Length: 181
Image 1 (cartoon, rainbow, N blue to C red):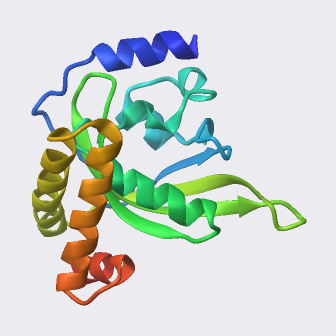
Image 2 (cartoon, rainbow, N blue to C red):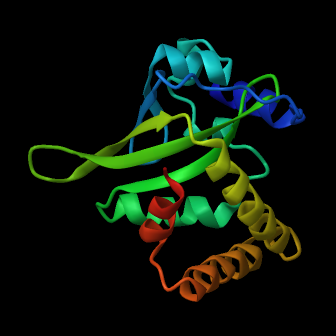
């Protein structure tokens, strides 16, 4: 069933219709260490457009919007798999092809022996000014990625992101926090 859902989702064309997370709403999801969804709250189900039984067991990248630069997800996975939290602005795509922006806070989940056993993500509605800023940066990074082969494109966009951070003399975290009001 998961492979069928993934095939169906890949066939969906992105729309220009934006969905909005209400300020008081929080999307919550949990995954295993491979990014497979183990929990999704009702807000996640509503915005993603999937019933809970179709989300559980599906890869979290089911909702990845094609506008999202892969280098951002590379950074996210590097950080959380190393035991660090990360905040990131993410553009997601619903089952209908509509999109929605979130400010994600992703953290590792540990067992009693301090081994990472999964990840927990809370996502809130981002400020529109933040989205406007980050959307322009993401567009540039995605253009870089698409101009080269898959792995080479990610390498080049990662370098472009690091160059941007270096030009601002900031770490990724510092940059993200300058955008949050």
